[in-house]
Image (cartoon, rainbow, N blue to C red; front, top):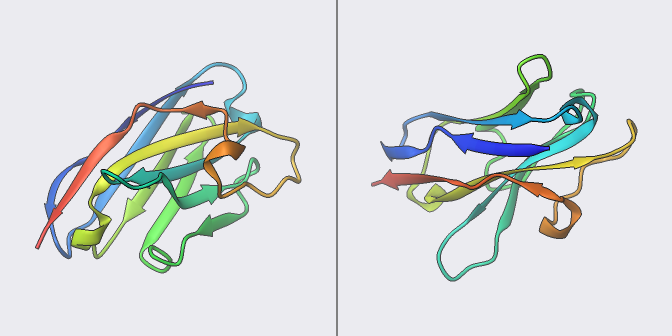
Length: 126
């Protein structure tokens, strides 16, 4: 599956933002999906993931309670809605995918995923 992330931009602290990732290919519905983020000089870090079936979601503690990951298999998209944005949320955000069997819990490590989007920059000003 090929992924294209969008929706980044410059926002103020406290604002909300929705990132979208559009996929092409026939395997999207069989993929676990995730969002990661990266800042200069740091490793890419896990933000959120959603299971292949869409019934289970997982979040890093840094965004839990103020973010929602969702998927639409018909539109082949995965979205990340982030509320109450903080300056420390500033990063390039990447979507990721991995084809799995239905019951697999999505991983939270970069190496678990084998398809990546190109990244979209989110800048949160204080």
